[in-house]
Length: 97
Image (tube, rainbow, N blue to C red):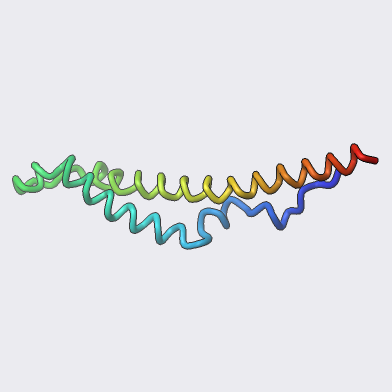
């Protein structure tokens, strides 16, 4: 059985940093993080208090990570489907011999 060509199996790093994923994740984090910060800490901000910095940073970090993970898994799905089709066609050729 022939192995699936590695050129069709992108590395995890290329999935994370390729195709504009960091830019999309950053924009999502800015929008969603700002909304969540307003919801979670708006009362203390309006009262003139500073919310805990770690909590605010995590509020922005979570949507960034979720968007990145969603993009990576979305890109991996077609690669896995293509690999499965390749393996099925290879098995069919081997079985027909």
